[in-house]
Length: 90
Image (cartoon, rainbow, N blue to C red; front, top):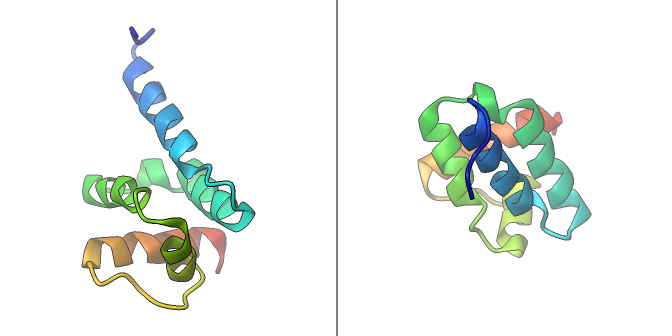
């Protein structure tokens, strides 16, 4: 698939991330998509990379992290979880 326009690659990446944020669990969808739309682009590259890794986390564990019931051991993941929670006003 060929990207159109100067931002085609970035738009394709955002579309992939949007798809990855759609988990089928309303709480996760709202938190992840909210961060993607309101905070992701302004984050430094390491935090954006951590967000992409975070999307590979199983839903039950991801929900516990985002609701503050427990925290990721990996510092980068903990940082992105904290940023998502701040973006959501949690």
